[in-house]
Image (cartoon, rainbow, N blue to C red; front, side):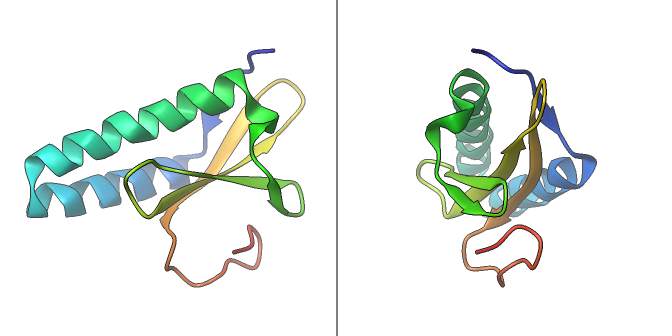
Length: 97
């Protein structure tokens, strides 16, 4: 069952910061990051339960080719993305490792 993906404003800001970082290194890398991030959004839209619950109700999906994770939860009628962050960041009290 497809569920719409709702991206929390903080996750949009985080993804933008990551994109700007990659843009400063290599523009092609920044473009690839957005393509792979988009692929994760499509994947969790079509198969939201496809990733392991990592902490509480939160699931983590990795962005292919990057050390970036997408933290999301399945809610009533949608999949809500709460965080887009580098895997080496400190563990979140709310979202887990």
